[in-house]
Length: 259
Length: 205
Image 1 (cartoon, helix red, strand yellow):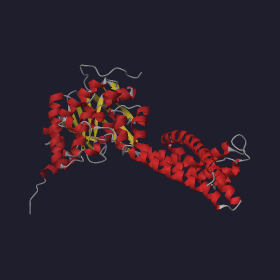
Image 2 (cartoon, one colour; image 1 turned 120 degrees about the vertical axis):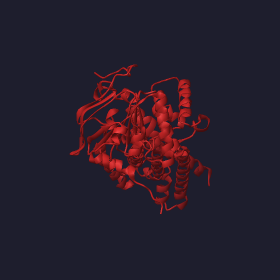
Image 3 (cartoon, chains in turn orange, brown; image 1 turned 90 degrees about the vertical axis):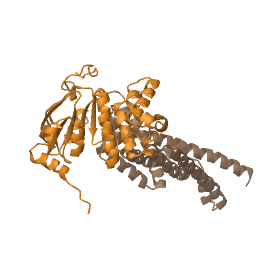
Image 4 (cartoon, chains in turn orange, brown; image 1 turned 180 degrees about the horizontal axis):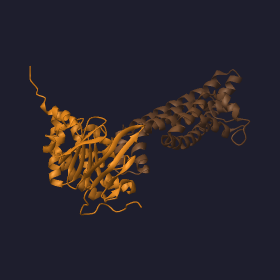
């Protein structure tokens, strides 16, 4: 039976649970026997190289992909038993380059999910303006603009506001700051931490940047060739001994010596 | 120009516009939904585009001739002419609907799905608006070609400005040929300009 109700007010723990998940496509194992629980309020970072399976794992949470074997549970219900539309409207999703609708204004982009949910227009407007303030884009200046009139960092802020619009308890981030210049990137990372402190959302965050992982994570799940290699808090991760963990940590040691 | 000739030009121009208008309306009504359907049925794309391509390569005079002996859609007169014009107009509209929708940025499509849009919402709120310019460009090409091709409809009794052209050819009267060709060319230019203007007005993707 498809689950029809939204999330319960007091959140079930774990909020998201990967249970022995594998994903095969074209004879290739993208994800192998992956298990992970994400509790309410956590920010779990899926860290790994390109092709490690981290984005695949993320896309199973809002059922953009289905596991070949195993199951992904959201709020205790297997994603395949969720009505996918309801599931997705309860999960915020932020991707690289934001994926904004080019033919919608900033206001229409951010207000999309509340509009799909049939909320009254004046409520949507108030909500959108409050969110734009929160992500540092004054609505008077930005609400009527189109995505092509924004910088990369501004677009990404709109993407975050859009993901928050329906007040979802869970947010998914797929390398959200990957395409930004380093200065903007740090600004948005700080803002992410600030929003998390204020809103207390649960987040699953995909990145290949170990600094970013250490900065935003409450726990880091390191993936290597589709397997979970390390699962640790950031401070434990710094001491991790596995080969792949050391490979990532060695990125932190690089000293730059001006000539 | 005699008043008689002027009145004939006006009448045949109207007839020509009706031929083109009806043919384009049918072609659009068939090709856009078919194009949308094809974006959901990838294996069919080759076959349907192939058919439409073949239709385009058949010389127009031959196509009109082929249709005459066919039951229901064939015979002499306007309806046969319209069937032939529709067959020509299908391809540009169909192909542009397909390329327009398939050309929507995959990241935009993915975020639409991830935000919980239904298939219908994805189509009407994202895919069609973003493909609108491309689809309209196809409609424009098809319309301009149809205005030209419709002059041949007179060969099978379809009427329109082609009547002058065939009459002029038969009587080696260049004035008559021009009386058909010049208004047809003007209509084509106007249609091209008008649809081009609408195309620019649509928000760029």
